[in-house]
Length: 167
Image (tube, rainbow, N blue to C red; front, side):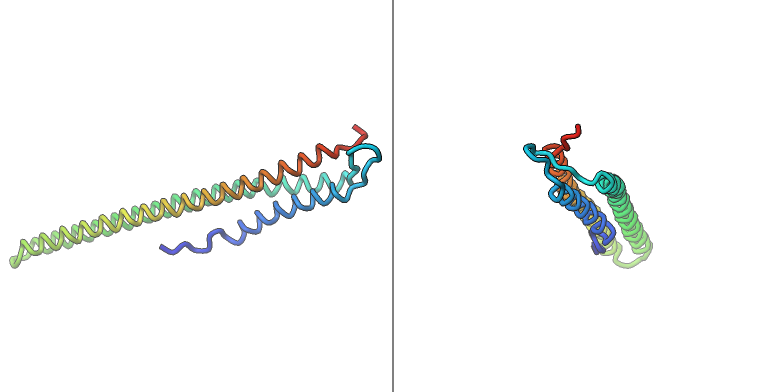
């Protein structure tokens, strides 16, 4: 089964955007002006607010990507089931046609049974392959989301340690 271009270029770009925004946020803190005799840092409030807003916009995109992955998985499973049904119907039609003939009815029955069994095995294989593919995608996406969440938490911890003295 062809896998297409997983993950899609737009999904990779959204993940890169989140990482870039987190790097920008870390850079903003590290480039901020240190308050003497404290562990506080002054940062450009407008730049900080803009980065946070961009992060808020990027995270829902990640959630839309999960929704698209689930829809793709459902579509693949539906296509696999439809193909399995088509193969089974075709095998049954062949069986019916062969049984109507006068010659070698037993041979036709065996051949049809074998084709039907092959079709069912092939259909089961298609369904299993589609489910494994969807599972692999979701596991990979979960790992990426966990990695990004860790980066966000690291950025927040850094900001909390360097909180401005004005508070």
